[in-house]
Amino acid sequence: MPGSVPPSPAAVDTTAVEPVPVTGPAHLLRVTLLMAGSCLPILGAVLIAPVLPKMQDHFASVPGAKALVPLALTVPALSLALLAPFAGVIVDRLGRKRLLIVATLLYAVFGTAPLWLSSLGAIIVSRALVGVTEAAIMTCCTTLIGDYYSGRRRVKYLALQTMCASASATVFFVLGGVAGAAGWRVPFWVYAVSLVLAPLMVAALPGPTVRGATALTPATARRPFPWRQLGGVCGLTFFGAMVFYTVPVEMSYLLDDLGVSDSGMIGLSTAVASAATVGGAVAFARLKRAPDPMLPAVFAVCAAGFGVMFLAGSAPLLVAGAVINCVGTGMLLPALLTGAMSRLAFEDRGRGTGLWMAAFFGGEFVCPLVLLAGESVVGSLAGAVGVLGVTSLLVAVGLTAVRSRPLSEDVV
Image (cartoon, rainbow, N blue to C red; front, side, top):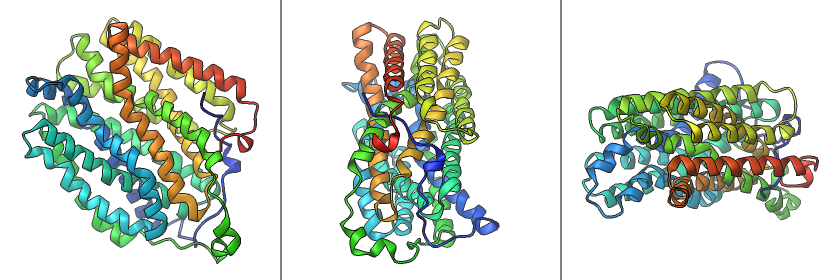
Protein backbone atom coordinates (compact mmCIF):
# COMPACT_ATOMS: atom_id res chain seq x y z
CA MET A 1 0.00 0.00 0.00
CA PRO A 2 1.41 3.43 -0.92
CA GLY A 3 1.89 5.87 1.88
CA SER A 4 -0.43 8.44 3.28
CA VAL A 5 -1.78 11.63 1.79
CA PRO A 6 -0.55 15.15 1.02
CA PRO A 7 -0.36 17.87 3.62
CA SER A 8 -2.67 20.81 3.97
CA PRO A 9 -1.82 23.96 2.03
CA ALA A 10 -0.84 25.54 5.31
CA ALA A 11 2.09 23.15 5.55
CA VAL A 12 3.55 24.24 2.24
CA ASP A 13 7.22 25.20 2.27
CA THR A 14 7.80 28.94 2.20
CA THR A 15 11.32 28.78 0.75
CA ALA A 16 11.49 30.94 -2.39
CA VAL A 17 13.87 32.59 -4.79
CA GLU A 18 14.44 36.31 -5.05
CA PRO A 19 10.97 37.87 -5.32
CA VAL A 20 9.37 38.12 -8.75
CA PRO A 21 6.41 40.39 -9.55
CA VAL A 22 3.07 38.75 -8.79
CA THR A 23 0.94 41.29 -10.64
CA GLY A 24 1.07 43.05 -13.97
CA PRO A 25 1.60 42.00 -17.59
CA ALA A 26 5.02 40.43 -16.98
CA HIS A 27 3.57 38.21 -14.25
CA LEU A 28 0.62 37.23 -16.45
CA LEU A 29 2.90 36.31 -19.34
CA ARG A 30 5.22 34.32 -17.06
CA VAL A 31 2.33 32.30 -15.60
CA THR A 32 0.83 31.78 -19.06
CA LEU A 33 4.09 30.40 -20.44
CA LEU A 34 4.60 28.07 -17.47
CA MET A 35 1.07 26.76 -17.86
CA ALA A 36 1.44 26.39 -21.63
CA GLY A 37 4.71 24.52 -21.18
CA SER A 38 3.06 22.23 -18.64
CA CYS A 39 0.41 21.39 -21.23
CA LEU A 40 2.90 20.09 -23.81
CA PRO A 41 3.33 16.65 -22.17
CA ILE A 42 -0.46 16.41 -21.93
CA LEU A 43 -0.68 17.11 -25.64
CA GLY A 44 1.73 14.25 -26.18
CA ALA A 45 -0.35 11.98 -23.98
CA VAL A 46 -3.80 12.51 -25.48
CA LEU A 47 -3.69 14.22 -28.90
CA ILE A 48 -3.53 11.03 -30.96
CA ALA A 49 -5.81 8.98 -28.69
CA PRO A 50 -8.87 9.48 -30.95
CA VAL A 51 -6.99 8.15 -34.00
CA LEU A 52 -5.56 5.02 -32.36
CA PRO A 53 -8.16 2.76 -34.02
CA LYS A 54 -7.21 4.25 -37.41
CA MET A 55 -3.53 3.70 -36.69
CA GLN A 56 -4.39 0.15 -35.66
CA ASP A 57 -6.05 -0.43 -39.03
CA HIS A 58 -3.16 1.19 -40.93
CA PHE A 59 -0.55 -1.01 -39.26
CA ALA A 60 -2.73 -4.12 -38.99
CA SER A 61 -0.17 -6.17 -40.91
CA VAL A 62 2.64 -5.34 -38.48
CA PRO A 63 3.27 -8.17 -35.97
CA GLY A 64 2.22 -7.14 -32.49
CA ALA A 65 0.43 -4.03 -33.71
CA LYS A 66 -2.32 -4.44 -31.10
CA ALA A 67 0.22 -3.71 -28.36
CA LEU A 68 2.56 -1.45 -30.35
CA VAL A 69 0.00 1.09 -31.52
CA PRO A 70 -1.10 2.01 -27.97
CA LEU A 71 2.60 2.31 -27.10
CA ALA A 72 2.89 5.03 -29.74
CA LEU A 73 0.61 7.02 -27.46
CA THR A 74 2.22 6.17 -24.14
CA VAL A 75 5.91 5.53 -24.88
CA PRO A 76 6.69 9.23 -24.30
CA ALA A 77 5.57 8.59 -20.74
CA LEU A 78 8.12 5.77 -20.43
CA SER A 79 10.91 8.07 -21.58
CA LEU A 80 9.66 10.76 -19.25
CA ALA A 81 9.44 8.35 -16.34
CA LEU A 82 12.96 7.00 -16.91
CA LEU A 83 14.61 10.35 -17.57
CA ALA A 84 12.75 12.78 -15.31
CA PRO A 85 15.02 12.07 -12.30
CA PHE A 86 18.07 12.78 -14.46
CA ALA A 87 16.38 15.88 -15.86
CA GLY A 88 15.81 16.96 -12.28
CA VAL A 89 19.50 16.61 -11.45
CA ILE A 90 20.42 18.59 -14.57
CA VAL A 91 17.86 21.25 -13.66
CA ASP A 92 19.43 21.71 -10.23
CA ARG A 93 22.99 21.82 -11.60
CA LEU A 94 22.71 23.66 -14.93
CA GLY A 95 19.65 25.84 -14.51
CA ARG A 96 15.95 25.64 -15.22
CA LYS A 97 15.52 28.16 -18.04
CA ARG A 98 18.29 27.01 -20.37
CA LEU A 99 17.13 23.40 -20.35
CA LEU A 100 13.51 24.45 -20.82
CA ILE A 101 14.25 26.44 -23.99
CA VAL A 102 16.30 23.68 -25.66
CA ALA A 103 13.75 21.00 -24.80
CA THR A 104 10.85 23.09 -26.09
CA LEU A 105 12.52 23.50 -29.48
CA LEU A 106 13.36 19.79 -29.77
CA TYR A 107 9.78 18.91 -28.81
CA ALA A 108 8.59 20.31 -32.15
CA VAL A 109 11.25 18.42 -34.10
CA PHE A 110 10.47 15.01 -32.62
CA GLY A 111 6.74 15.61 -32.25
CA THR A 112 6.17 16.25 -35.96
CA ALA A 113 8.48 13.44 -37.11
CA PRO A 114 5.64 10.87 -37.62
CA LEU A 115 4.35 13.07 -40.44
CA TRP A 116 7.18 11.73 -42.58
CA LEU A 117 7.85 8.32 -41.05
CA SER A 118 6.35 5.19 -42.58
CA SER A 119 7.55 2.54 -40.12
CA LEU A 120 5.64 1.90 -36.91
CA GLY A 121 8.94 1.17 -35.18
CA ALA A 122 10.41 4.50 -36.30
CA ILE A 123 7.29 6.31 -35.13
CA ILE A 124 7.58 4.72 -31.71
CA VAL A 125 11.25 5.80 -31.52
CA SER A 126 10.29 9.38 -32.40
CA ARG A 127 7.61 9.24 -29.73
CA ALA A 128 10.19 8.07 -27.20
CA LEU A 129 12.31 11.11 -28.09
CA VAL A 130 9.27 13.31 -27.53
CA GLY A 131 9.21 11.85 -24.03
CA VAL A 132 12.84 12.88 -23.50
CA THR A 133 11.93 16.50 -24.21
CA GLU A 134 8.77 16.21 -22.11
CA ALA A 135 10.84 15.07 -19.13
CA ALA A 136 12.83 18.27 -19.28
CA ILE A 137 9.87 20.56 -20.04
CA MET A 138 7.59 19.27 -17.30
CA THR A 139 10.35 19.14 -14.70
CA CYS A 140 11.51 22.67 -15.53
CA CYS A 141 8.03 24.20 -15.55
CA THR A 142 6.99 22.60 -12.26
CA THR A 143 10.33 23.46 -10.64
CA LEU A 144 10.05 27.08 -11.76
CA ILE A 145 6.58 27.35 -10.22
CA GLY A 146 8.13 26.16 -6.96
CA ASP A 147 11.01 28.62 -7.43
CA TYR A 148 9.00 31.73 -8.26
CA TYR A 149 6.23 31.30 -5.69
CA SER A 150 5.80 30.13 -2.10
CA GLY A 151 3.09 29.46 0.47
CA ARG A 152 -0.53 29.77 -0.62
CA ARG A 153 0.45 31.29 -3.95
CA ARG A 154 2.47 28.17 -4.80
CA VAL A 155 -0.53 25.98 -3.95
CA LYS A 156 -2.67 28.17 -6.20
CA TYR A 157 -0.40 27.87 -9.21
CA LEU A 158 0.23 24.15 -8.79
CA ALA A 159 -3.54 23.66 -8.77
CA LEU A 160 -3.80 25.99 -11.77
CA GLN A 161 -1.20 23.86 -13.53
CA THR A 162 -3.44 20.82 -13.14
CA MET A 163 -6.51 22.76 -14.24
CA CYS A 164 -4.77 24.03 -17.36
CA ALA A 165 -3.39 20.60 -18.17
CA SER A 166 -6.83 19.05 -17.74
CA ALA A 167 -8.54 21.77 -19.77
CA SER A 168 -5.94 21.37 -22.51
CA ALA A 169 -6.60 17.64 -22.54
CA THR A 170 -10.23 18.41 -23.31
CA VAL A 171 -9.20 20.69 -26.16
CA PHE A 172 -6.63 18.23 -27.47
CA PHE A 173 -9.14 15.37 -27.49
CA VAL A 174 -11.51 17.42 -29.65
CA LEU A 175 -8.69 18.74 -31.82
CA GLY A 176 -7.23 15.27 -32.27
CA GLY A 177 -10.62 13.86 -33.20
CA VAL A 178 -11.40 16.62 -35.70
CA ALA A 179 -7.93 16.59 -37.25
CA GLY A 180 -7.95 12.79 -37.27
CA ALA A 181 -10.96 12.85 -39.57
CA ALA A 182 -8.54 14.04 -42.29
CA GLY A 183 -6.11 11.19 -41.58
CA TRP A 184 -4.35 9.67 -38.60
CA ARG A 185 -1.13 11.62 -39.32
CA VAL A 186 -2.70 15.09 -39.33
CA PRO A 187 -2.83 15.63 -35.53
CA PHE A 188 0.98 15.44 -35.38
CA TRP A 189 1.17 18.94 -36.92
CA VAL A 190 -0.01 20.37 -33.60
CA TYR A 191 3.37 19.60 -31.99
CA ALA A 192 4.85 22.53 -33.91
CA VAL A 193 3.15 24.91 -31.47
CA SER A 194 6.20 24.70 -29.21
CA LEU A 195 8.14 26.74 -31.80
CA VAL A 196 5.97 29.69 -30.81
CA LEU A 197 6.51 29.17 -27.07
CA ALA A 198 10.32 28.90 -27.06
CA PRO A 199 11.19 32.50 -28.04
CA LEU A 200 8.60 33.86 -25.62
CA MET A 201 10.18 31.82 -22.82
CA VAL A 202 13.59 33.29 -23.66
CA ALA A 203 12.24 36.81 -23.27
CA ALA A 204 9.79 36.46 -20.39
CA LEU A 205 11.09 33.88 -17.90
CA PRO A 206 13.66 35.13 -15.37
CA GLY A 207 16.43 32.82 -14.27
CA PRO A 208 15.76 32.12 -10.56
CA THR A 209 18.44 32.59 -7.92
CA VAL A 210 17.93 31.51 -4.33
CA ARG A 211 17.10 34.23 -1.85
CA GLY A 212 20.11 35.26 0.21
CA ALA A 213 22.90 32.79 0.91
CA THR A 214 21.12 30.35 3.20
CA ALA A 215 21.06 27.57 0.64
CA LEU A 216 24.81 27.74 0.22
CA THR A 217 25.86 27.21 3.82
CA PRO A 218 27.91 24.12 4.77
CA ALA A 219 25.01 22.80 6.84
CA THR A 220 22.72 22.99 3.82
CA ALA A 221 25.32 21.35 1.60
CA ARG A 222 25.45 18.37 3.99
CA ARG A 223 21.66 18.09 4.28
CA PRO A 224 20.52 14.69 2.99
CA PHE A 225 17.94 14.43 0.23
CA PRO A 226 14.46 13.67 1.68
CA TRP A 227 14.10 10.16 0.22
CA ARG A 228 11.78 8.88 2.93
CA GLN A 229 9.46 11.86 2.73
CA LEU A 230 9.03 11.47 -1.02
CA GLY A 231 8.94 7.68 -1.24
CA GLY A 232 5.38 7.11 -0.08
CA VAL A 233 3.81 9.90 -2.07
CA CYS A 234 5.67 8.74 -5.20
CA GLY A 235 4.34 5.21 -4.71
CA LEU A 236 0.81 6.51 -4.36
CA THR A 237 1.36 8.75 -7.37
CA PHE A 238 2.43 5.76 -9.50
CA PHE A 239 -0.89 4.04 -8.86
CA GLY A 240 -2.81 7.30 -9.10
CA ALA A 241 -1.38 7.87 -12.57
CA MET A 242 -2.86 4.57 -13.76
CA VAL A 243 -6.22 5.70 -12.43
CA PHE A 244 -5.74 9.13 -13.98
CA TYR A 245 -4.87 7.93 -17.48
CA THR A 246 -7.31 5.07 -17.92
CA VAL A 247 -10.00 7.29 -19.40
CA PRO A 248 -7.69 9.27 -21.75
CA VAL A 249 -5.90 6.16 -23.03
CA GLU A 250 -8.70 3.59 -23.16
CA MET A 251 -11.86 5.61 -23.84
CA SER A 252 -11.57 5.30 -27.62
CA TYR A 253 -11.28 1.52 -27.36
CA LEU A 254 -14.19 1.26 -24.94
CA LEU A 255 -16.35 3.37 -27.25
CA ASP A 256 -15.24 1.32 -30.25
CA ASP A 257 -16.31 -1.84 -28.40
CA LEU A 258 -19.77 -0.25 -28.04
CA GLY A 259 -19.97 0.45 -31.78
CA VAL A 260 -18.80 4.09 -31.84
CA SER A 261 -16.15 4.31 -34.58
CA ASP A 262 -16.27 7.96 -35.71
CA SER A 263 -13.06 9.66 -34.53
CA GLY A 264 -14.78 13.02 -34.13
CA MET A 265 -17.43 11.52 -31.86
CA ILE A 266 -14.78 9.61 -29.92
CA GLY A 267 -12.79 12.81 -29.41
CA LEU A 268 -15.87 14.75 -28.31
CA SER A 269 -17.03 12.03 -25.92
CA THR A 270 -13.60 11.77 -24.33
CA ALA A 271 -13.38 15.56 -24.09
CA VAL A 272 -16.67 15.69 -22.19
CA ALA A 273 -15.31 13.20 -19.69
CA SER A 274 -11.96 14.98 -19.48
CA ALA A 275 -13.66 18.30 -18.76
CA ALA A 276 -14.77 16.83 -15.45
CA THR A 277 -11.09 16.67 -14.47
CA VAL A 278 -11.03 20.46 -14.64
CA GLY A 279 -13.99 20.58 -12.29
CA GLY A 280 -12.18 18.33 -9.82
CA ALA A 281 -9.06 20.50 -9.95
CA VAL A 282 -11.15 23.65 -9.40
CA ALA A 283 -12.77 22.01 -6.38
CA PHE A 284 -9.32 21.20 -4.96
CA ALA A 285 -8.12 24.79 -5.44
CA ARG A 286 -11.16 26.07 -3.54
CA LEU A 287 -10.82 23.70 -0.58
CA LYS A 288 -10.64 25.40 2.79
CA ARG A 289 -9.53 22.33 4.69
CA ALA A 290 -6.64 19.90 4.45
CA PRO A 291 -6.89 17.40 1.58
CA ASP A 292 -5.51 14.56 3.74
CA PRO A 293 -8.85 13.08 4.84
CA MET A 294 -10.28 13.54 1.35
CA LEU A 295 -7.94 11.14 -0.47
CA PRO A 296 -9.90 8.00 0.49
CA ALA A 297 -13.08 9.64 -0.77
CA VAL A 298 -11.33 10.76 -3.96
CA PHE A 299 -10.17 7.22 -4.73
CA ALA A 300 -13.67 5.95 -3.90
CA VAL A 301 -15.15 8.37 -6.44
CA CYS A 302 -12.67 7.12 -9.05
CA ALA A 303 -13.66 3.54 -8.21
CA ALA A 304 -17.36 4.38 -8.58
CA GLY A 305 -16.71 5.84 -12.02
CA PHE A 306 -14.85 2.71 -13.08
CA GLY A 307 -17.76 0.64 -11.81
CA VAL A 308 -20.24 2.52 -13.98
CA MET A 309 -17.92 2.18 -16.99
CA PHE A 310 -17.69 -1.57 -16.36
CA LEU A 311 -21.48 -1.93 -16.29
CA ALA A 312 -22.15 0.46 -19.19
CA GLY A 313 -24.03 -1.06 -22.11
CA SER A 314 -24.25 2.18 -24.08
CA ALA A 315 -22.02 5.11 -24.97
CA PRO A 316 -23.90 7.71 -22.86
CA LEU A 317 -23.61 5.56 -19.74
CA LEU A 318 -19.93 4.95 -20.45
CA VAL A 319 -19.34 8.70 -20.72
CA ALA A 320 -21.25 9.24 -17.46
CA GLY A 321 -18.99 6.79 -15.66
CA ALA A 322 -15.91 8.45 -17.13
CA VAL A 323 -17.14 11.85 -15.91
CA ILE A 324 -17.52 10.50 -12.35
CA ASN A 325 -14.03 9.03 -12.51
CA CYS A 326 -12.48 12.23 -13.86
CA VAL A 327 -13.96 14.40 -11.10
CA GLY A 328 -11.92 12.31 -8.68
CA THR A 329 -8.73 12.31 -10.75
CA GLY A 330 -8.96 16.10 -11.10
CA MET A 331 -8.61 16.41 -7.34
CA LEU A 332 -6.07 13.63 -7.00
CA LEU A 333 -3.23 15.04 -9.09
CA PRO A 334 -2.83 18.53 -7.52
CA ALA A 335 -3.10 17.06 -4.03
CA LEU A 336 -0.21 14.67 -4.67
CA LEU A 337 1.92 17.28 -6.44
CA THR A 338 1.39 19.88 -3.73
CA GLY A 339 2.41 17.33 -1.12
CA ALA A 340 5.63 16.52 -2.95
CA MET A 341 6.64 20.12 -3.64
CA SER A 342 5.98 21.26 -0.08
CA ARG A 343 8.88 19.19 1.29
CA LEU A 344 11.53 20.29 -1.23
CA ALA A 345 14.03 23.08 -0.64
CA PHE A 346 15.32 25.17 -3.56
CA GLU A 347 18.48 23.13 -4.14
CA ASP A 348 16.51 19.83 -4.12
CA ARG A 349 13.45 20.99 -6.01
CA GLY A 350 14.52 19.94 -9.49
CA ARG A 351 15.62 16.49 -8.36
CA GLY A 352 12.53 15.94 -6.23
CA THR A 353 10.20 17.14 -8.96
CA GLY A 354 11.93 14.77 -11.37
CA LEU A 355 11.32 11.83 -9.06
CA TRP A 356 7.65 12.73 -8.72
CA MET A 357 7.35 13.07 -12.49
CA ALA A 358 9.03 9.69 -12.90
CA ALA A 359 6.44 8.08 -10.64
CA PHE A 360 3.52 9.79 -12.36
CA PHE A 361 4.53 9.14 -15.94
CA GLY A 362 5.75 5.66 -15.07
CA GLY A 363 2.21 4.92 -13.96
CA GLU A 364 0.90 6.43 -17.17
CA PHE A 365 3.15 4.20 -19.26
CA VAL A 366 2.17 0.95 -17.57
CA CYS A 367 -1.53 1.85 -17.59
CA PRO A 368 -2.38 0.35 -21.02
CA LEU A 369 -0.10 -2.63 -20.41
CA VAL A 370 -1.78 -3.40 -17.10
CA LEU A 371 -5.23 -3.08 -18.66
CA LEU A 372 -4.19 -5.21 -21.64
CA ALA A 373 -3.02 -7.92 -19.24
CA GLY A 374 -6.25 -7.58 -17.30
CA GLU A 375 -8.24 -7.87 -20.51
CA SER A 376 -6.53 -11.14 -21.34
CA VAL A 377 -7.43 -12.49 -17.90
CA VAL A 378 -11.04 -11.33 -17.53
CA GLY A 379 -11.95 -11.39 -21.23
CA SER A 380 -12.80 -7.76 -21.94
CA LEU A 381 -11.37 -4.26 -21.59
CA ALA A 382 -14.44 -3.19 -19.64
CA GLY A 383 -13.79 -6.03 -17.23
CA ALA A 384 -10.19 -4.90 -16.76
CA VAL A 385 -11.45 -1.39 -15.96
CA GLY A 386 -13.76 -2.95 -13.39
CA VAL A 387 -10.80 -4.71 -11.75
CA LEU A 388 -8.94 -1.40 -11.59
CA GLY A 389 -12.01 0.07 -9.93
CA VAL A 390 -11.95 -2.62 -7.26
CA THR A 391 -8.25 -1.95 -6.70
CA SER A 392 -8.93 1.78 -6.35
CA LEU A 393 -11.54 1.02 -3.74
CA LEU A 394 -9.04 -1.12 -1.82
CA VAL A 395 -6.54 1.76 -1.92
CA ALA A 396 -9.26 4.05 -0.52
CA VAL A 397 -9.88 1.60 2.30
CA GLY A 398 -6.15 1.34 3.02
CA LEU A 399 -5.74 5.11 3.09
CA THR A 400 -8.68 5.38 5.47
CA ALA A 401 -6.86 3.03 7.82
CA VAL A 402 -3.66 5.10 7.83
CA ARG A 403 -4.92 8.65 7.36
CA SER A 404 -4.77 9.40 11.08
CA ARG A 405 -0.97 9.35 10.89
CA PRO A 406 0.42 12.87 10.27
CA LEU A 407 1.91 13.11 6.78
CA SER A 408 5.03 14.82 8.09
CA GLU A 409 5.77 11.63 9.98
CA ASP A 410 4.87 9.35 7.09
CA VAL A 411 5.58 9.94 3.46
CA VAL A 412 5.90 13.64 2.73
